[in-house]
Image (cartoon, rainbow, N blue to C red; front, side, top):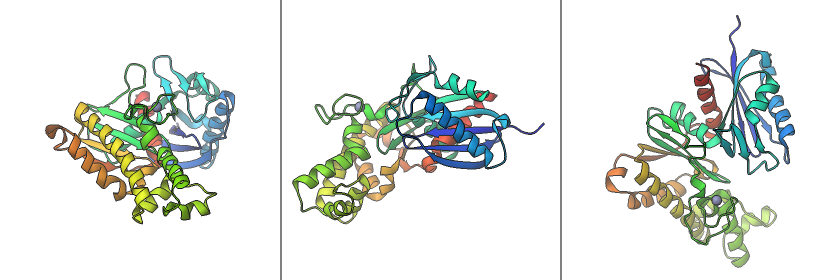
Length: 322
Ligand SMILES: [Zn+2]
């Protein structure tokens, strides 16, 4: 009998990454496709099937060669009811039994997981946290999320919503968050929040170096521009990043004090900024953690980049097959 394959799919708000691997986890092919905007549940099922079919076709295989599919999603997946409750970037898909609907459509077992949880597993098994049994994976990009591996196991909480790190309240009566609350970490320290603060500063103060990027970018700047301006010693950009890093640092310190991990892995677009980001963060964490909890813990950049979620799904789905 021909050996079966695994498909791991990372459904993002803008892109879908599909990886096909053999049962030993060896990656055979990967494909990145756009997530269509404004897709509903029926559209999503079609798009996921098409992403898997197209990726398999690149190695002359089809759905019949699959043993199972692992899918990670950017939002709230209820592990008790096995229902996707809400995907903030794909708002038309809600309260939908995506796992069973996709399994039925493909005729193959499907396992669904939250994307930050999957990325934590990926980094723990094959990335920056290999060998660690107690670690926190944090992603800082347009939003902020976390996955917790405690005592070697993914910690999901009672319904699967553990690790909603971006919605820790850090600034009472602060900016409104996408979740509807005010002052969430995500609303003050995500890439989206950094860009929003920079665009507010641009409107008030034409002196900043940010204006040179704004001219080339329809009058607006992104978080990436803010990091570039900070590297060029622009005081406005530095102040914006300092504030974001401060709230992130305090929040990470609280997690370290609570959970005593041996490693904190930081992924997501914002962490590509390198030292402008990591150096002040390390200082804040050193200052705000209890001595005994912080003496061994390191904060390191993620190693698997945008593939962490899909690689984590390969491990999770393979485990399920045993
Ligand atoms: Zn929130």
